[in-house]
Length: 456
Ligand SMILES: Cc1cc2nc3c(=O)[nH]c(=O)nc-3n(C[C@H](O)[C@H](O)[C@H](O)COP(=O)(O)OP(=O)(O)OC[C@H]3O[C@@H](n4cnc5c(N)ncnc54)[C@H](O)[C@@H]3O)c2cc1C
Image: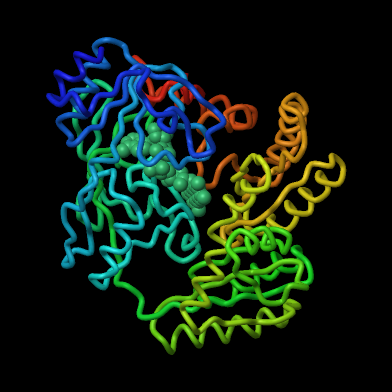
């Protein structure tokens, strides 16, 4: 296989044989699920991806596409071996078209590089998931969400078109720079959020918006997490168009403070809502003042706007580091479920109830404006056996409750390997059969990411 792949690429240095593959390529960002592969291939263009896929297809070899490997659900763990197809060197911004507010990029472009590039041109790419070193291709494959989804939407809302290499090596382009498109099936939508199971994304046509003139962040401390979350409905209803509405418990902030050295104001608070507004100056200030009145009427202990961008960045640094801050003190299992926005407070109450009943510590934070609840379930001093059993029991209860409230398995991280049991248990059989039929139509030999086995 190695010799064949080297011949296909014409560059032996970009094909790494199984025993020489660095451990980080055999896992996800958490590094707990591991596997081995026969080859790691660094592709440089669509033609190479196509030729590698054609070879894998003809020989029935499993392929795992990979961006930056920052996923939290094991989706890049090559459980079936075969080829890891790394797209991170396809990292060119091919075009920024200021006239149509679009950009064309290769899939390995890193999110933070792309954001900085377009912002220097007075434009903005709004999807803003917490991990900025992820690739655009990985963001599309997971339909990444993030902080600014309340106002702007998620990655899906910014993908105008995709070029993808299918499992048999053929290449399709679906979508274009056009704003509207009712020209047949919108196949690109299938690839967005499909976790690399349907095709390899090799080119991305993205929508941009003009960069807002200013951004203002506001921290709103509350005496309880419940009252903080309950204020979110009133904040949204006030029609002041916030960009982000995040909630964080005080106990989590303390971990973030220790991790970053940044201190939050109002340390007596039990929870905070962190908001941003963007737009032109007068509009942003008018909106922020409108929400001040709303927050006060919802029992906020204070209302702290950060007019100094450096101070605002420090506060967001704490929010941005939370997964890593928790990981620094204990192994943890991340949960990324969604509930309807009016159920977030009730759901968090339930999380606290399970915490008390089981003694399993859970840390809650997330995107309050869209019902996306992130939990870190803390392992602490549990033995391997205790952790496996107790974690599974707790997870079953947590997912079951989310579904009862009308929620779903994942808001933005995906199903991958780690969340499959919970996805299976609560997804309608008919719906699963249609998903499998789509997989069969595009990849009947199940070459691509077959370890994501709910599509089997
Ligand atoms: C600290 C931290 C914070 C995070 N915060 C957020 C957040 O706020 N919101 C959020 O949504 N996620 C978040 N994530 C998760 C992660 O960053 C995202 O899932 C991200 O989109 C993954 O991109 P990646 O380039 O790392 O993809 P990878 O991890 O390499 O791959 C993810 C999946 O996409 C597939 N894939 C990758 N590239 C391609 C391609 N070109 N074609 C086809 N399939 C491909 C892979 O096979 C895999 O199934 C966070 C992660 C960390 C570590």
